[in-house]
Length: 492
Image (cartoon, rainbow, N blue to C red; front, side, top):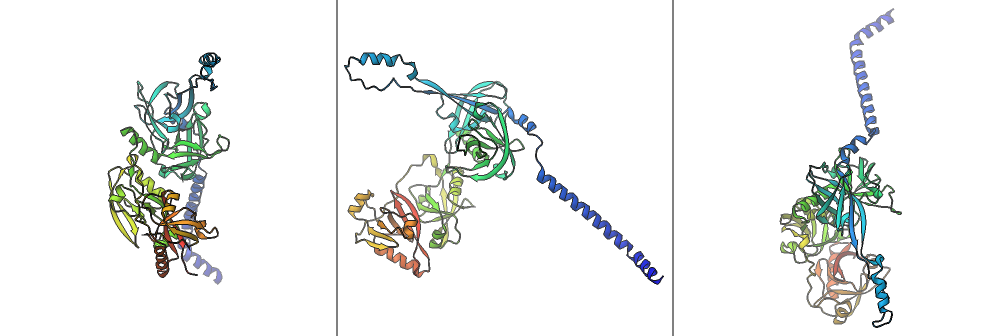
């Protein structure tokens, strides 16, 4: 009985606490279960149908047909001698041959309306060289379009139609918010089959194909010939890309399609709409990416930025930019690589004065540069160094080097007054050959200082070794085009 009594007392004393703890555990467990179910449902969430979205957007998507006159020939090129008895016969034959006369060819593509007053976006390659452009709407109505402006760099064109009523249109979304794995829908005129919808996901972001301003969204939504210029929609019915290209061995969709990101397209469209042409910012430098060995050679902590290989006449030169500077920030934004810098400069308005931070001689400097316009920029040859002092060739850094002589200058077609060290031979087993140095290259700088004699290069090598550097930065020109190469100078 004593044991039972003690147990009873223990139960009575502990009951309020135990009951509260049990209730808390129950509700916490229930909440955790609910959250787990919600996360599982979100992970498995997918639209039951794209029908409603397709209905909402279809009226704003258009098919595009172009017509182009293809010039014909006057007939077979038979080269009949003048005065030949057959001359009249063959001339008459050529005049009567209708198959060789001018003919019309047609091409198909897609596009989408972006305003109720009839502005339409498509790809430049869809309408390029077209004499006539016809727009077919989802309703079946056809209207002729005029070209407002084009941008071959991003393959975007802006068209305009005149309609007697407001047109249904779609808006651009923010392509930067698109995530890999998000659902997307493509719509257009694949293979000339008329209005068609395909769905998929964002497969990758920030793809670069060939241009300086490329920023493609990769998708596995089916895109085929004829889809070019059509929109890529997110689930809110916003255009986040313009379908432009596919990767395919057979010309058909294999699930690798590319859409130019809307944040690139909107800037281009705004300029085409306002000016009928693009107006991109221009810095006026030639640049290359910073590699690990280049960063080590100049004492730069991070392998980032854009290394300036040449500064022709232009905004950067006027502001004091120097060859060998590394651009680390542009207009307050850190520069990761040359591609990022080119895009950022191009997207900055012409005439804006920006702050550019460069790494130079082991420290940073800030330049204020007023941007010019890239479309108006002319190619200007690089500034030429001073006179040369010929000496005998010498082997260094895996190369046989010689100062510029009149004979070498004539042989390599160097510009008058060119100086530096000419590569007259390269050991194929050395780092110099591995990094692309070849006979005929002209090395004009080492350690960001000009070279005229082989002794100059020897001094730069010694300075780098004394400073404990593993490599030396060389400025190399080939056919006038500059690039930087870092070669090892570490003593063994």
